[in-house]
Length: 356
Ligand code: PEP
Ligand code: MN
Image (cartoon, rainbow, N blue to C red; front, top):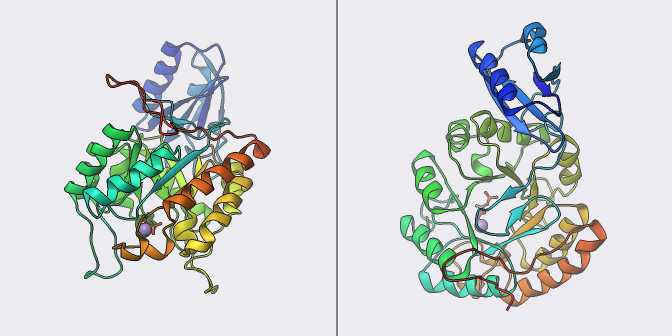
């Protein structure tokens, strides 16, 4: 159920409706839009008796949402969600494209700083890197843990880049939420409902990767799990699904971008690194991702991919990252987007502008 408030409804009226919903034993999720606020109702098994709610002051109408996902749906919020990063001009969603670059895993301070410097110089605003790695083999490199998180926090201080890193379980979630700007939930965890709910209680944006065999509905329902706990800052990420095609590691399903955008207000990024698994296919698919209308791309970058401890074959060289930025910059205006170059951070040390 969804309560649509009148455009002139006051904050007090919105508050009163939320309290009424909570008194009925449900959860109220007020989501302000450009024209009006809508309040999602969750926690109800069947229909909520709309009679009383419709009579409350400031209420325009009460609508039943037919889709299984409510808070992620455009029925609740028509405008695209834009996620902003306090004290910076960086955003995910909206007109500006968000570019995330960095290694699969943080391997050492030197490795991470070398890559971060080049990612920042190319004008990206976000740096990625795993401190905790979900590996297929228990014998493979599992990440540097907290040390990796600290290295990334230093990178944020030095280059201004906002940090995205993965939480692999409830234990690492708390640490990641403390150190990072965006909590990544990986493909293998897309239906780890306990982790999703915990991430919903954090007050940091969550980058949710599509599970390798997840349908569109399952993907949006995973986002709904996070939102149902009160965290509305969810960024979706298409990273390829498993198919019979074996010329790539996964099949990058770009058509999910317009499909998501039709149904949901949440931003969606594309990861052509995991989506193809092959360095020579990352640039073409990154261009295609922007052309199809994605809100940005996430790519793995390594200065010595042959020595990388994970995902070397799909990591592009820093020079290729520069080429990618230049090409995306040219495609952006065709799809009514802009590629910001560099991140501006309000701080005592002045403005970071990676492009200079
Ligand atoms: C990653 O981003 O390095 C990663 C493990 O991604 P995914 O969960 O999409 O496999
Ligand atoms: Mn990886």
